[in-house]
Figure: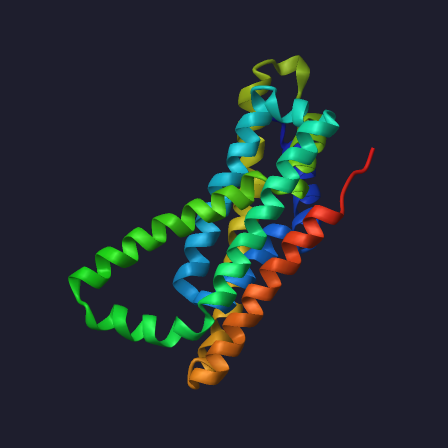
Length: 221
């Protein structure tokens, strides 16, 4: 199906692209700083889902259309940027509630666990939205991924789906490491309500800045 040399070449290309932090990585870090390890890990899961949705879109031809159409690309990019800003504003607004929320969740038992589960699902959805609207991901999967398929072997969509698992797996590992590192730093800040509030606000500002950066940069053709 996919030859070993193509697979390894795409893996190397994916690693080179992923090691340069993009919107998804910075989003995970911002969520980790603002909300902690659990939210960071749920965000990573959402990013993986959203990113692989891009792979599926490219495999069926939608991704290439978005990458080639300036209007479609800009619409997706601006939607993702606006969502990042919204999440950042929410994190900054509720920065002073972080300590109280953590204590309250621990004291509510089963009810707290149910609320946390609902919160995790929402966080996963947030991560998926950011992952699927990530301009870096759109360009990479739409412009780079198709170059590594073997047209003579046929079944091109299936080849793309298999190759797409490579950057997704690499991103899962690296994003997890970023999230755990940022969450560990936040744990130290959590020893003080004031420090925790400050780091939560910093995480919110990071997401707002990321949203503005995503909106202002990228292709202009």
